[in-house]
Length: 409
Ligand code: PLP
Image (cartoon, rainbow, N blue to C red):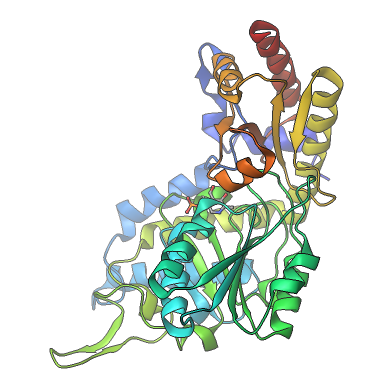
């Protein structure tokens, strides 16, 4: 188990955590939006630009070979991290959002026809709703929504009743960015596969927090972003089963993704390059690999256990100290996210007053407006934790919330 002493040592890897905000040391509790970067990740970016920068895949010269080697080694690191034996199914994208758009567009083109059905859940991030709506509009498809309980758990009995021969794909989040609910995606995948239906799992909030083996999970598609797991912004991953990716048309056209171009007919590159048009983010991929190795070094199981301690500590302290507190998301399996409201106080007002005390949280609908509609609220305050947060920071946070409430009441 990671101790507070271990955490103090790890915090030294993150210089931004020493920043002063309005004269107070930053307390960063907005990790679900993006995580801070350790020195090794930023050093990798700098080293690459200063020593190995050249465009990948096409060059005959030394630097291009070196850059290509690093980029492809990064793909292997990603595959290993998520338990995928074959890097051909690892496609670099700009992030989770682009990965979902890729699947919606390309899988939709290959496999969906008028009257078919897509299933999503009521707790999805907009990036796992809108791409499917665009596809549904284009191809005249229906979207069914798995409802949730007040606690924020999916109704899998309902899911069973709507899964049918018209269903082409199920798209669900592994972990909710608002509620922290860890969905039973293993069971969802099992149920979908029984009916021959593919499943896309949005792992944006899962990969940084829980151990993962995608091969065991048997997900058809799994997507996530580097910036939420201590890596750089602007790069993410689509894992797809190669037998599906082989049947799907390219998402974008351009360099890299072709085998042969003529004005009469163009043929496409093999996987994964068929889905990677244009110069890839080869600097980002290598820095991403550094981030994953950094996490691996600490141990994702240790991270999960420690973050759970933070979550329990914060939830108990908030419930003990704050009157009229309502926590959204009380699922039996929950990741390190605490969304709440206090009486009728607007979440934005609490967010601003916390900011004045050096505390970064997120307020609003968290790109999950249908979920806000379900709870009949405008938004919440969301504190989201990472392994570099301390119990002392949570004490500071709870005291700051108390102070904010006093000022606003
Ligand atoms: N899905 C979930 C569950 C998220 O939390 C987020 C970001 O907050 C996304 C998708 C979109 O990720 P990105 O903006 O990195 O593409």
